[in-house]
Amino acid sequence: MENILNAVQSASSIAIAGHVRPDGDCVGSCLALYNYLTKYVNYDWNKVIDLYLEPVPETFTFLKNADKITSEYDTNMIYDLFLSLDCSSPDRLGGALPIFERARKTICVDHHISNTRFAGTNLVVPDASSTCEVLYTLLEEEKIDTAIAECLYLGIIHDTGVFKHSNTSRQTMEIAGRLIEKGVNTSQIIDETFYQKTYLQNQILGRCLLESIMVLDGRVIVSCVSRKIQDFYGVVPSDLDGVIDQLRITKGVEAAILIREEETQSYKVSMRSNGILNVSKIAVYFGGGGHVKAAGCNMKGSLHDVINNLLEHMANQLEAAGRSV
Image (tube, rainbow, N blue to C red; front, side):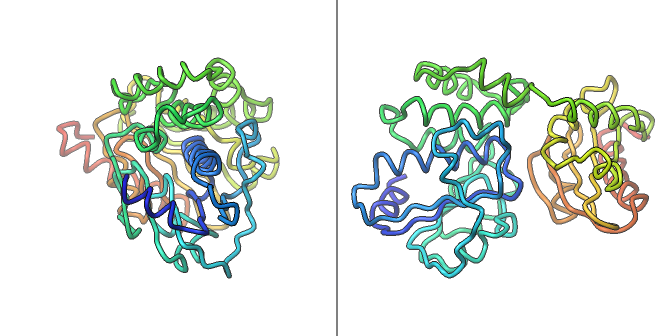
C-alpha cells in the first residue's frame, strides 16, 4: 500500500479503469477509488484524475461521480499512473488498453484467481470476495465516507450474490458491517441494483429458462440466447444479468452455462459452478478467466461445437471427481 500511495501522490496525472462490460464490483471499486483520490489525495489542483469505463448499467448511476465516468478513451494521453481495478488481464481493459500501455507506471488491484499480474505493481488477493473488499483494506477506514462506502458495498454484494456465494468470508461480513455503519442504505442498493428487474429482463429470463437443456446426465444445464432473439426483444448484455445464477440453482446440477451470440459464430460464454467443477480452468483454456465457481470466455465456431467443447472439459472434470457421466 505504501508503494501505491507514493505512486498516487507523486503522479500529476492518473487514469483509473476496469474491465469491459463493467459489473457491480468493477464499477464500485473504480468509483470508490476515484471518489477517495479526488477527495483526499488531489491536493494539487493541477492533478488530473480520469475514470474510464464502458457505459455502466443505469442502476449504478446513483453512485457519487458516476457522471464523471467517460467512455471516450484519450489514447494520446500519457498518464504518470494507470490504476487497473477488477481486471484479470490487459486485453480485458478494452478501449483503455492503449492508455495502460503508454502510462509511465501501472498498478493492478484485483481478486481474480486467473489474474496474469500484467501491471508493474500487482495486488491480487484471490481469497477476497471482490476487488471492493481488497480496496477497502487499502483505504484509510476513517476517510471512507457514505459515498465511498456505497460504492464498496455495491461491489461486495454483486460479487457475493448478496453474501450467498462461497467467496463470502468472515472478513467480508465484517467489512460489510463497517460499511453499513457509514450510512449505506442497504435495502435500496440490494433491491434496486441486484434483485429488481424490468419487464423485458423478466421476459428474457423466462425465455432462457424455458429453452434451457439438461446435459451430462442432468449434471449441467445450458441455455443459449441467439442474436435473433436478442434483436426481437431489444436485449442488451446487461439484461441477461442474473440469468446464469437462476440456471445454477436448478436442483441436481453441478454447473450452468449461458451462451450469448454476439455475431455469426461468435459467442460470449458465462459459467457457474456449484462446487465440484472449476470453471475458471475451463475459461482460461479458451482464453477467458474468472473464479473457480464463476468464469467466462469468448468462443468462435458453430453453437454445436462451442457447447460440445465446453461439455468435454466439464465431463473430464466430473469423471476425475468420481462423478462419471
